[in-house]
Image (cartoon, rainbow, N blue to C red; front, side, top):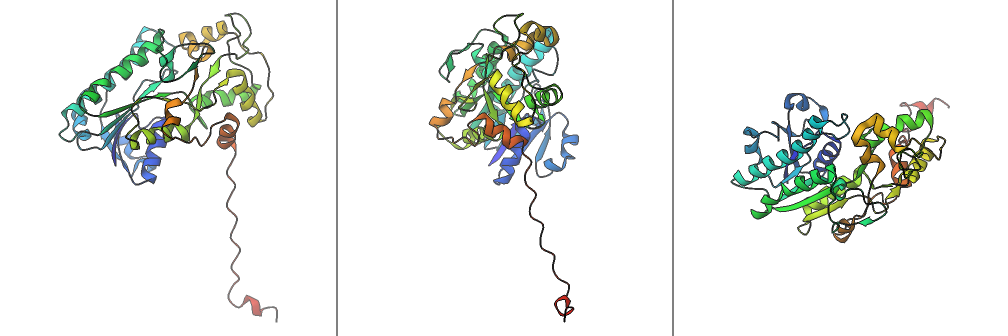
Length: 335
C-alpha cells in the first residue's frame, strides 16, 4: 500500500512510518524541510516530498496514485502561549491543511480509496464526568470549534467516494515525547502532584478532571485499523478503554518513576497565569471511550495505564551474551 502522509515527522507520524515500513507498505511523506528529513537514517527508505499542506503546490500531484492518505497536520497547541495569532495558526493549519489535501484528492486521476483524518478529543469540549462516545455532540469552546471545522473540512472527500475515518486523538503517551516529555523531568525532580482542577480557580489542584490517554503503539494501531478495515469510517475515538482522573495518572507515573506523590498540586489559576488559555486543555479534560474502535475489533496492547507506563519506562533486557567459541585445539591443551 502506498500511503501519503502529512505531519509525518511528528510523534504519531514517525511511529506510523516505522510500522508501515515493517509490514511492507510505502510511505510518502510531505515535509516543509524535505532535504533535512531525507538525511535522517530512519527516513532513507521513505519517499519525501517537498511542500506545505496549508499552501497549494506541486506536492499535490504526488498524491495521485496513492492508495491511502493519512492527514496528521496541525500546529502544536502547546508550542506557544496562546494569543490571537497563535490561535489562528492552530485553527488554520488544521482546516486549510485538510482543505488542500481534499482538493488534491479531487484532482487525482487515480484517487486514494481512504482518508484517515486526524482530529482530537477536544472536539467534545469540557464535560465533567460524562462518558463520551463517538455519538456525543461537539462542545463550544475554542478547541471544540477548531476540531469540528477540522473534521468538516474532510467531508467533501466522502462525496467523491473516498472512505473517511476521523480519529479523535487523546493524550498520546510516548517516552521522551509529547505529554510525558513535559511531565517526566518535573516529576523526577520534585515528585508528582495532580495538575489543577481542585474545583475552583484558587483551590489547590486535586486532579479530579479526567484524562483520556493512549499508548503510542495503540494510536498507531488504530490508524492502521482505519487504513485496512473497510468498515472504519466516520469518527473513531483514539483513546484507551480506561481513562483515569489526573490524580490517578500522577500517582501511576510517580510509582513507575520511583518518586513521591503529593496529593495537592497547583491551582487552576496558577496554571492559567503560567500557561495562558491553553491551561484549560489540561485542567478540564474529558472522559472519552473508544467505543467504535472496539466495535471494529481493535484489541488494545495497553488497555490500562500501569501497564502502558511500565512498558514505556522499563528498559528492555539486554540479549544474553553468546558463549565464547573455544580456540582451535584448546580442548587438547589440558592433556
